[in-house]
Length: 364
Image 1 (cartoon, rainbow, N blue to C red):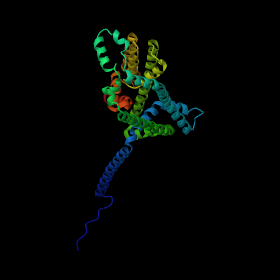
Image 2 (image 1 turned 90 degrees about the horizontal axis):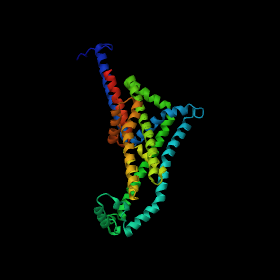
Image 3 (image 1 turned 180 degrees about the horizontal axis):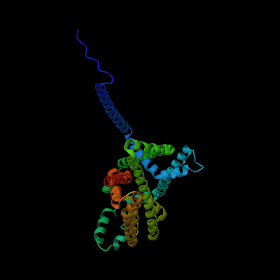
Image 4 (image 1 turned 180 degrees about the vertical axis):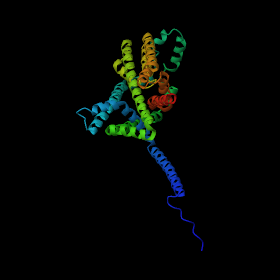
């Protein structure tokens, strides 16, 4: 008979070490499982990450106002009503300018169509301002007469612009517009859910950050929220300022629809490097009308306004709220926009805030 090995007592050191080793393996397996599930969930919702990010940016920017309104007697305890009102206001603020722009474009479409038909039949006449140019008049006039002054129906550009090409461009534009509308609709739904969760959501996020990364992690999340909020405020303030100044310039130089164009400029100025497109087209219109001095003045004035606003005013506004140095704010905005696109305007300063907080903790 083979003797059995002696039984290990339950409280022996060998049993304790085996249990500890088993717990370590279980903990490691749990971490791997959690990471895998999180990555799988992110992969499933990958097409909606941008939607959630945009909703988070808007919610962070409006969070102080949401708290203030939630404390009023009209909305106290009515989170669904509060979320509905805020979501509808955001939808109106976005859709109203878009609707006005589409309506204005439809009103101008008839005149544009008539001009296009005239160009096909008779060509484009030489503008008067070309004859007043200080140099290059003969060369420009010769090229214009050879390429544009003749009927454009048989030109190479018109031959390439056949119906199939137009339909392809139309389908592409329609697909992009439908995608943008879908993203905006899902963003509104996400915003409604975030607004409805209210303080409970922010408290849960801070609690999770504090539990996972300690008090420094919670402070870091709060600083990132402040950076995003300051960036949104800086974009709005600078955009409105540029729109007002350039709206006055449009009126002075005689650009038609100066108020509407100033509003469009304000919207474009909230995006990096978009305002020059608007006042550049306005200056081009003045140049075509023969107002060379007005066109040059508008172009110079607009360039100065945009340069000062983009490189000095906006970084200072954001830096004062986030206590970031001027260069970090500027690099965060420009680098974020180049790396992540439009959403990077808000991600960049937030990441610079993280960098600044980590540096402060390291040196202090």
